[in-house]
Image (cartoon, rainbow, N blue to C red):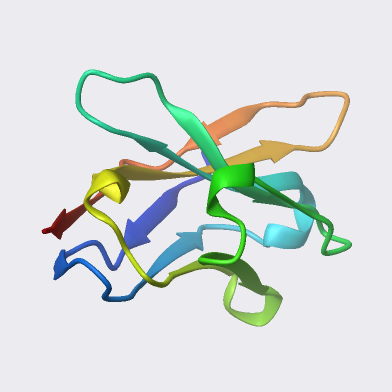
Length: 118
């Protein structure tokens, strides 16, 4: 069973920065894609950004320029650097991974809370 463990969530003032980490229990190179999602209170979970083993990224349009995803294969960890945070970025942030085909099994972390105060 694959485990994804997020960390780095915190309470931060608007304009501040945070870096989230997602540590996987197996090689992240074995996943077809890894991603960060977020879910604000009363809203649906939404994609923040995804990254493939080749490094191809797909950002939510509204977050381009403020959020950056990166990966460290040696540490089996994916990061999300968040800058210029806004109160509307307040949400639980989830790490996601999907195994390569044919299984395509999805995995989710337990989430980490990010709260941005105005």
